[in-house]
Amino acid sequence: MGDLELLRRFEPVIKYTQGELFLPAPVEDYLRGAALYVNTKGKRKAQQLAPPGTLDPARLARLGHETESKRTYLQFVERPMSRREYKQWRKGADRPKFKASSRFASVGLLSRLIDTVMRLTLLLRGRVPGGYAAAAHQQIGKQSSFAYYGHVTRDAGYVVLQYWYLYAMNDWRSTFGGVNDHEADWEQVTIFLVDHGEDREPEPAWVAFSSHDEVGDDLRRRWDDPDITFVDGTHPVVYAGAGSHSGAYLPGEYVTSVGVPLPTLIERLRRNLARLLPWGDGGDEVIGIPYIDYRRGDGDSVGPGQDRQWSPTVITDQTPWVRDYRGLWGLDTQDPLGGERAPAGPRYDRDGTVRDSWRQPVAWAGLDKEAPTAHEATAELEALRESVLEESGRVSRELEEARNRLRGARSADRTAGRDARHPSKRVAELTAAVEALRQQATDLGEDLDAVDRALSRPDVIEAAHSHLRHRAMPLEAADIRGVRDRLLRIWAAASASLLMGAAGLLLLLGYRNIVGALLILVVVMVVIEAFLRGRLVHLIANVVVAIVIIIVLMAIVSVILGNFAQGLGVLLLLAAVYMGWQTFKEGART
Image (cartoon, rainbow, N blue to C red; front, side, top):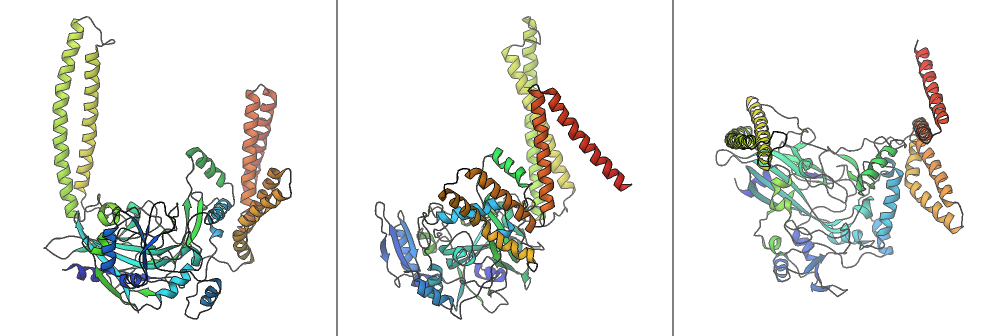
């Protein structure tokens, strides 16, 4: 079966969120509207190598080859919309409409503050200008062709089908409240088939969607995973993120935090403190920027059984525009954090090196350790058993030789009048060598037992999610019908701004005890948050526990410092209160 036929047999269906502005476009259409630039060191303004309307895949490949060592980038939008043009565009009847959720209601106050700070840094970092996404949407126009670029490789017993999609824009930040915008966006879906050679046709085993959060094992799902939906049994459904275009297996809204790394001790202290707060249960796993990736699947869709069908093209390492153009596929904002810079093409990372997902997709998806079939797994276990037996025999021989040398050296020590408590250097070295070889023999024995157990149970089938460290799941639909839920959404959106605004106002007014005032304000905000989340009693209970712990620690310190009577008195008083409480609970039960 040819590569194109294989690609078509398993090509995905991609479902988008209502309000999505960009769908996968043909490379030719994108290049037709783009210009090519080169950044020269020491010069602030980039040099234009090809104006809009002059590029096609062949010319891009030629210019890419000529400028291989230089920093090149494409620019699709020549000029972002003005404020007046943007307002007119927003009123357009053909513009898809989108309804957002409150991402801040799902995360803690600290994450909201960090999000505010990170958005302020956009004023200093390189970023995609406002009105850019609208201009890109207007320029790309109403699409009639929806393209993917298929890359087929064979490795480690798998036939790997990669589907690459080019979007004119990632407008996650400006349209959907996400982390970043960048011009151009390459995303992929990878399907791993079991390669049966010429005996029979390859069979699907695993699938991996490009994602912001997952790496290695978490990227991929087994073909029989209950989370995956199929069209006609062979076409997996991808729920693409609104603006971000990352893939999900289940439709819905996904909350994630872009982590800010902390030292281990501080991170541990933060996690323990977070349990006392209203958002402690199911709140932030890390300190970071909260965002929602909308993967609802309630908008446009492309693929088999849909109104829009794919126009496929097979690409390889020898496709000129894939191989020779290493530059960025959109505006190079030179953002030092990278989030607002355009990506490179399917084959390359931004630094011009070959992507892992292109060069070694089996390793990229963590499949080096997974045999394609049970038959191959058994064969590999039998080969491993032979290897362990061979290694075990070698270690046994070395152990016998080392033990004989040790006994000879010990006899020499005895003849020289040395007792076992004060061995010679030679005896000490040989003793260590014998102990190391015995440990190796023990380890190899355990390896052999594990292999034999596996061979005795060849039909063991793991659960579909057993390889996942983190199974990404959408949020449950938020119930915002109640007054409290509506107030929580408003409060979550405004709380970080209120805190920062209050701090600024206190500084401007020259308030002396600003630290004390801010602490009081934070306490008030935490109480309000606890009430709106229905966790006020939980907060009070945790605060009482924290106060008791502090009193106990102070009493212990008093005892250590010599205030024995005072410290012991406090501890006895607390013990009496605790015993009285337990007695009251026992009485209430009986």
